Amino acid sequence: MENPRVARIPFPAEIGLSLAAGAGAFAFSALVCSAARGHLPDVPLGLALLAAVLLIARATGILYALPAGVAAILAYDWFFLPPLRDMNDAAFTILALFLVMAVIVSAVTTAAGRRAVEAERARGDLADELIKSRARIVAAADEARRRIERDLHDGAQQRLVALALRLRTSAIDQQAAAGDLLEVIDELRELSRGIHPAVLSDSGLRPALRALGRRSPLPVEVDVRLDARPPEQVEVCAYYVVSEMLTNAVKHADATTVAVTVEPDGDAVSLTVRDDGIGGADPARGTGLVGLKDRVEALGGTLEVRSPAGEGTTVTCRLPGSTG
Ligand SMILES: Nc1ncnc2c1ncn2[C@@H]1O[C@H](COP(=O)(O)OP(=O)(O)OP(=O)(O)O)[C@@H](O)[C@H]1O
Ligand SMILES: [Mg+2]
Image (tube, rainbow, N blue to C red; front, side, top):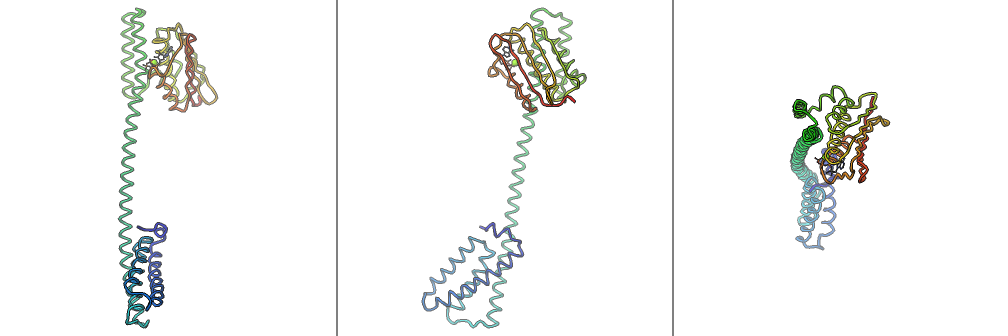
């Protein structure tokens, strides 16, 4: 294993250090061998030198261990085992050749090893990136499916519920019912193409909320006090909140009237939907209120439901997004 601190030094400098390690190991081993001569048996000293080389290899890698090992063995041969070597020109030449050979071999091996490690790491990074991009694709598909589910639930479903109730109470004639059904079909067609109701994108929140109110079997008072149109996602969010709350008022509240108010609130839009029904709304009993909270919070807004038993239900939203 390579020492990471050593691996950060530029490679040419490391080759110089490797030569220096060999020369240093030679000098040190020569001293040790000279001192040990006549006092220690040859095999234990040879094994001790090899153990030291093993430690260097583990701490710093082959680049330093091979020249140090070669130098230590030369020193052992020349200064410990008879006949002892005179340090003349020939001895220095041999020492230099051995050292350079060891540095070349260890440098080439080290460079190849590092390239292999880098290639492995790059393969790992690529695999990580692929896993992440797959997760992103799955998340995007999930998100799109959830959006369509929510828009269907909060939009077209509301219209069908309202229509069913009006048909049940015979408050609508066949012609009008057929007209309403055709509008629902149009809305479904728009939804399947990822578009929100045309009246909303074309004319803005006030006409879109009034149209929702007209289709409800309950009297709905709509008061939109915005001078300018808020960002599209705020309009869409507000539209679906009102749509779902009107459905809930019809389905659960036993209300006689619903009031919808939209007004500026600093750099946000404030939306309130209030019915005078039985209260007791509980997000844990369905998916509609929870879905609205998710929808509003996805825009960085807040949604609060107040629904004391017997006192009606009020949903208040704050949707960030300046109205121009
Ligand atoms: N305006 C309301 N007045 C009284 N009770 C309500 C009102 N709105 C919701 N509730 C109660 O709270 C519950 C949860 O409402 P939520 O809209 O989350 O679900 P849901 O309308 O039952 O079903 P869906 O998931 O189709 O919307 C309802 O089942 C109902 O009991
Ligand atoms: Mg509901």
